[in-house]
Length: 98
Image 1 (cartoon, rainbow, N blue to C red):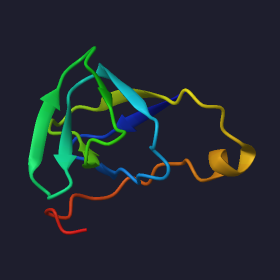
Image 2: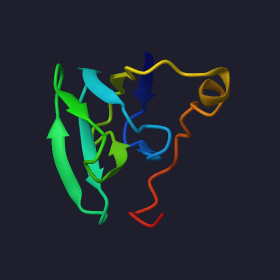
Image 3: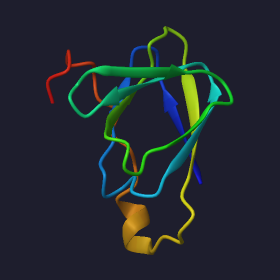
Image 4: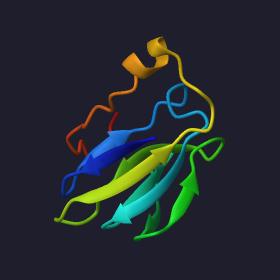
């Protein structure tokens, strides 16, 4: 389990191989799911939970100015190699071009 903090307006790409079995819970602020086709998805508030497996979500975005926090839980045990690839890159908002 780890905590992802998104600064206001920040966007984080969801890499399917790294987030395969991840379940997220918004613990602070709001998070918008960006869908595979680049369209904006639902905006989730505090205590909302969501699966990333098989959803077509390609990014998490903070639509607000204040920081948002998401607790990420992965049920399967990770090996040391997997953990080393987990640090999430925080990308600037690129207007939907990735």
